[in-house]
Amino acid sequence: MSIDASAELPGEAGGLKFAIVAARFNGEFAEALLKSVVENLELAGVSPDDIECVRVPGSHEVPFGISMLAEIDEHDCLLALGVLIGGDTQHHIMVGSNAGLELQRISTDCQVPVINGILVAENREQAAARTGGSINRGREFALAAVEMASLRKKLVERLNSYEPKGNSFPEEWEEGFDISKS
Image (cartoon, rainbow, N blue to C red):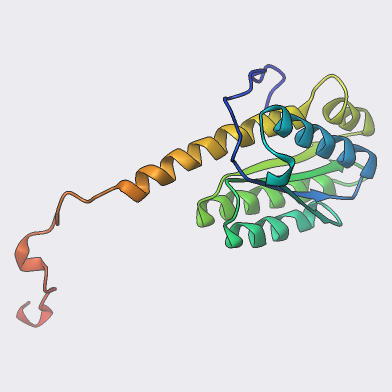
């Protein structure tokens, strides 16, 4: 996401279902991020009844919650939220990278969009700017979730109505190969 991300709500989101897995660590910032995401989903037309929220201790645990919800397959899009702030080591970068890779894997394996809303900030000032200040990442994550949920719904409908145009293999292949003739 970037500072110049779209400010437009991508269409009507009524009837779409979302789940959020939000870390509790760095609570002040995590709460502001979660609040912004929920507010913006509702502004896009999502009913509060269609937003499920699961809390986990920290950002490292977020992929587990996302994975379980993806397997249940009751939602059109999942959002992973957390705030990592740098300290004396690079631990925040390692957790953010690992979580991001795992979220991408879950999304492709389970064929459900996962919005990676785990913020990696160098300091509290950056975290504050991105969770409630001048850069509203919560809004960006909500808008991306609505767009991806709508896209998933359209693509699933196309996939469900897809009818193959016949067997693309020659008829003699239908019974398999006889390797003894080689």
